[in-house]
Length: 170
Image (cartoon, rainbow, N blue to C red):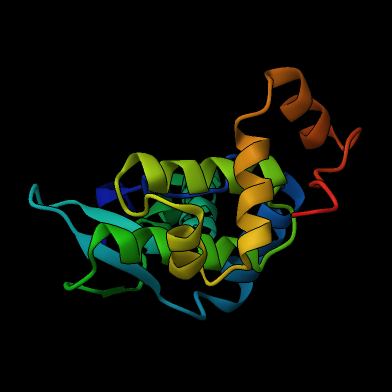
């Protein structure tokens, strides 16, 4: 599939990608090729939503943009698996699961991802979010509190000055 036809997952929790890790992934793809296909969901307009493989898509785009003109076509197309029967709840839970297991996803990004799921009507309660994401209820409660915190608190958590924790009784 052409990488120009790919749209980001609206439930993608990761806001920032580590430049060094992305560069390592790009170098790996350049030397070994694409090892694992990305997963896509088709849209009605002929485009696709990236379900899994957001970092691989970013690495391909980086390689394409940096390649000499003669090599750009090598990184124009990416191997993909198309999943037709994914609803928004599955799209959100897969994106969350794929990113929460990797390092570097902040508590603020996780909290925002949970709030996007609620805003989209995929879950109404913390219990429903816990079931949807396969995460402990206490973690869901804490992350949602972080998502609703003032910007100064979120900035402190993102920069490592504060650690996101909950009350001892929850």
